[in-house]
Length: 116
Length: 116
DNA sequence: TTTATATTTCGCCGGTTCACGAAATGACCT
DNA sequence: AGGTCATTTCGTGAACCGGCGAAATATAAA
Image (cartoon, each protein chain N blue to C red):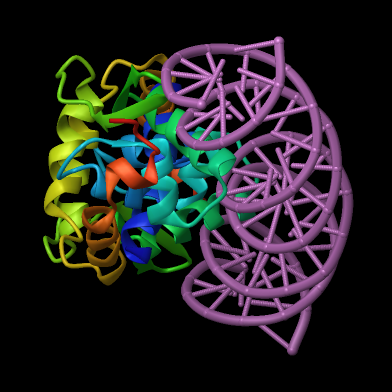
């Protein structure tokens, strides 16, 4: 029960839903997500840890960056059912549309100071 | 988006999940639900209004009582998908099991002062 | 080693949520 | 009309949540 409540709590914030929706097309690192949400990095980091604790997303460390992606693993029953539903929901929400366009427009090399 | 967040918020409280689960077998009035949850009537009433606003439950007035039941209507897309999921989840949670037993044991006539 | 960048952790502040009791409202019996 | 019970509304206090900036940590270039 406690676990189920926690799962729904993770989904009870519009900025966390924005994160899940912007990760649908492709994984992103924290600084890219920060650019999309326009929130302080510490705030974004906290949101990501909540989504990760609920197993909606997983992180991969790559150099100084941490990439986050949707959890496609089917171990967690709640996530297994909820992620596909969320994928079908609010596909044309204006905010979500803007976020995806923002994410698409980010030049990863420049934004994340990647040396060649 | 706002609507979806609100839907998840309605599910983000263990007492509200208890209400949804105890209503699965059959509708109950507020005083019966109050007996099950062991919370103040005003608190229970508030939880019920949150669940009703999110369209998970509907109310029917019957004399001085208000009966609440799960919303089987399929108008709300979120509810249409989430209620069946919740029905399959935490079926053997200890608290849920106790709540259902409590509800089953309530003598409606006596508890709700029903005149013959 | 120093500097730059990315990320997380921590503490604080303001707003929200959840619990309660008191009061208001509604329905029905006498 | 007066009394009783069911329910809701309202105000309040404690706990929680989401935002921020500062500091800590990690990686890698210079």
